[in-house]
Length: 161
Image (cartoon, rainbow, N blue to C red):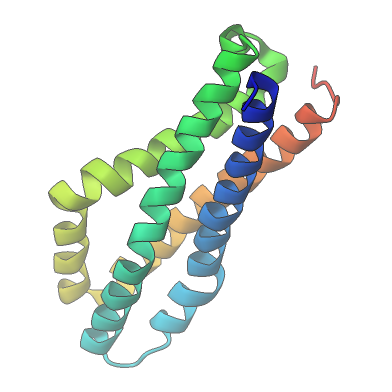
């Protein structure tokens, strides 16, 4: 495979992984969490959420990793690392920040303490815990969509600033 073909493959892989990853975040934020919050029994709410979250965990981890590797490859290929220093590429900076947050949550914070912390919070006050969870997902979804919109516009020649 030639270098340009590998770049095109990396871009396609990157886009597919972002669709699966952020699409999953969109589903969790706009459908799953609101549906789980409507369950009357706090114990059932927590158990269902944890089962469904576990089912999505592998996809989220795999797509996040592949997104990072493909993105780093594309930046190396175009020798674009200096774009982090240029304000017109704010979307690249935001995209990387969103990726870093998700990567830290999925691979560091959640296994080390976040899963246990949320579980305990949900046992103490389920409504409050799920409200906080929903709020955090909303923030991350908005940032993700803003980064995606900026990246699409930027990749097609629209210059910001």
